[in-house]
Amino acid sequence: MKIALGSDHAGFELKEKIKKFLAEAGHEPLDLGCFSPESVDYPVYGVKVAKSVLSGEAERGILVCGTGLGMSMVANRFSGIRAALCHEPFSARMSRLHNDANILALGGRIIGDVLAFEIVKVFLETPFEGGRHARRVKQIDSLTKEA
Ligand code: RB5
Image (cartoon, rainbow, N blue to C red; front, top):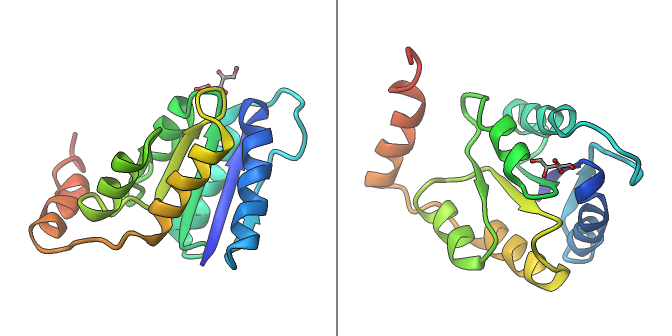
């Protein structure tokens, strides 16, 4: 699966490790930056990944900042993006089953590599359940359009 990756300086180290983990698992990581641990602004990279997923260039996205909060806030401004901030596998699983999440946000200053890899794996391997959840997912955009 082609997966767009983005981080700021606080998520850089974990983003690099996730990139390697994805490549070793047979996925195609698309690294949209940042490219060093020098201080940068997270919205720049959140926007790049959100646009990549919306355009279909990447099937899913993974965003890492210090807490994952800023990245998820940025990505969720885009209609059609459903970014899930997850620090344990249960939320990652449910974000796919019930919310059809297309971006995973992580906090590089919160979790360690091994837990992050497990969350990424669950996020990529869990299908959307559809059914009543498809109706609700559609409502995320339709009911908030005029808000
Ligand atoms: C950077 O210091 C930090 O604010 C950023 O990585 C992120 O945690 C914002 O939500």
